[in-house]
Amino acid sequence: MSKQCVEATKGLLFRSQKYQTMKWIFFTLTLAAIGCLVASRNENELIQKYLTKLANSGYNTHVKPTSIKGPGEPIDVECSMYILDIHKVDDVHMDFKAEFYFRQSWNDSRLAYSDDDIREVVLNNDKHIWTPDIFFVEEREGIRHSIITPNTFIRISKTGTVLFSTRVTITFSCPMDFTKYPHDTQKCLFSAESYGYGRSDIQLSWKNISHPVQRNMDIELLPYQIISVKQGVSHISMSSGEYSRLNVELTFHRKVGFFMIRLYIPFIFLTILTWLTFWIPAKLVMPRLSILLVVMYIMIQFGLEINANAPRTSYNKGSDVWIAMCVSLAFGSFLEFIAVHIIGRNKDKLQKRFGKNDPEARAVLENDAKPSPVSNEPSSNTVSLIASRLKRDVLLSGRIDRVSSILFPAFFIGFNFIYWLVYCSGH
Image (cartoon, rainbow, N blue to C red; front, side, top):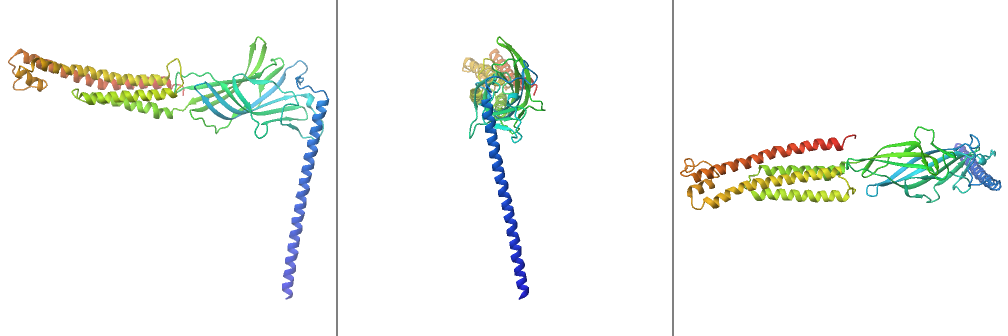
């Protein structure tokens, strides 16, 4: 019985110690949370006092700060960019829409502070301080995001160094060349510069890091793939002065998989189908004619569908050259059929002219100029003439079909070699 009491006492002591430990942990966490709240509140109060002091000091948000290099020197504004997404590349309107973070950094000595209790001043708008008047030259339309809160922040360090970051979506114009469409590569350039300050006032530069312009590697574009993102610096002279400019070049290459399925493979098979008519006897008019007419109709319909979704240009595109050549080869097969058919009709003319009254001539016509007991030793010049003409026509039509069955494929293979060499060069 005493042993059970001892064990019960130990259990109570263990639970009591565990309770005391949990209580101390809870107490410590509570104190830490209160300390953080007090510190945060104190820091917010200090920042508010800082802004009030800044406003009372006569700080003018419309006057640019003095450069750290000295009076009269331009302010160095370092920029960087992170491209979040490319929403679309529009071939029709020749523009593209990009969403990105744009960050600027400069020094404003008027914003420096010495309060050690403030780690850094963080603002969610740019109303309290001077900011560079940067704009994008190729911008057509754009927005600065504000859901759920304005997607903008400003960080001010003790030395007065300012980091200004904002999230924007902008549609940029992009002149495009569709000569090699659908194997085209488009290079879209957009630039940032100061709207009012010249090069002597503001000097723009990319941040001194390995990749000041970065992009989300998971960006997927339906018609294009991003080949490269490059940045550069330039200067532009206008009548109002010389300005510093930052450039970004995006290179897009069109994905050809869709066009292989909807343009190239169907037209190759349809073109090959027209060559089968060369092996059909010339006297089978309807099968040859039906195949050629159906193939040309399908080609025209496919071509109209492709061109309906293609950019409209005043010059020939690569797709236009391909469609035109395939349709031309099909039409050439049709002309070849007409030529063979006209030659074959000579038999009908001879039938009407000689076959009614001359049994020997009728026998020759019915046998297509093949040797027969009657025609081997003709009894008249008429039969001999008919036989020679029929033999000549049969040989000629057969020769045309045989030559076409070699010439058309050879020409198409040569065209393919030149086409893919010209329009796919450089990729």
